[in-house]
Image 1 (cartoon, rainbow, N blue to C red):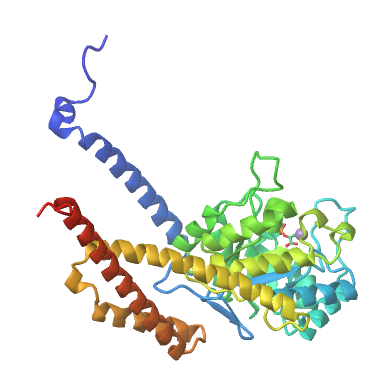
Image 2: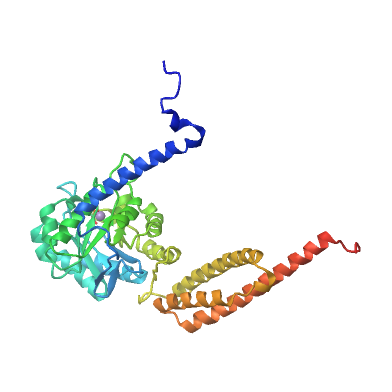
Length: 420
Ligand code: PEP
Ligand code: MN
């Protein structure tokens, strides 16, 4: 029987106990590092570069500051369905209309898509609303049919490792949305992207759409950590499709917001004018009103992670009432954030000396930063300067007031009235 520790004495002396976990961490770190090196070795083009890539197509940039919203039905079914979908996407501030015309279905008896006829409905509806369009290709013929008319080509989850198809879309000059396979690791997904890049097409957008796990309450499990990991390993933009992950519409809103918070560059969401009648994926498709409502709520989340999303916008269907309700929502956020700012200002005041409350150089630095952010967001520098001059003035006054009150209270506690 062992009577003492199995570690050599020098490891377990009081002074060196910290060495044991440190050794464990070092081994873990080395293992992760070596694994990373092995993955990166083959990610010659998809691997992380000094700068992240953004993909520009007809004035829409995926991977820039703006969160790009893409929406539409799972499958294109009719001209009217696509017209209504396009109107909704536009109204919500979306930029890209989706719709499958070739549907790789699990069962051969399920609706397989309208093919060429559907393509016309999709392209026409997108054009009328000045939207871009995306559709899935499944083989050489479908690629040839859509390539000249579609702005972005989608490779579906089931074809993520169809290497011949990946090489084919690597030879065209349109951006590719590459969905993560149902059971693909992040490494396999990135290597699939490498196939496209190494064939000559640099414009790949990765799309996390849920992976198969043991959990049956959702169709798949949305792997949001994949967004961060993919961005750590690769320079390519990453978007999230919460619809195929959840398989149910009640989760789409929260998953979309979580995806933006997790760093996604865009969202691909299924929406149908009449989900109950949809030929595929009705249960996960949002109603048009839900899609528009979700878009209204995305701006706040985007702003909180230093991104932008402007809901609504240019749609003709906007009423004075709906615009005012957007403004009410934004005003509420402004006041809530201002209240939090004032709380922090008070705490800062506690740390300052009374004669150093006003810090002009810090004020200048803040104004400079915010004016350049404002300019990027098309906000007048004048407006930013005026608002902040007022906020600074008010903050300084409130800090002085609070310091004076505290000093008075202290004096009173040390020398109660009448004690002098
Ligand atoms: C789709 O987007 O319609 C689709 C079939 O998605 P996935 O390939 O992710 O299942
Ligand atoms: Mn679908």
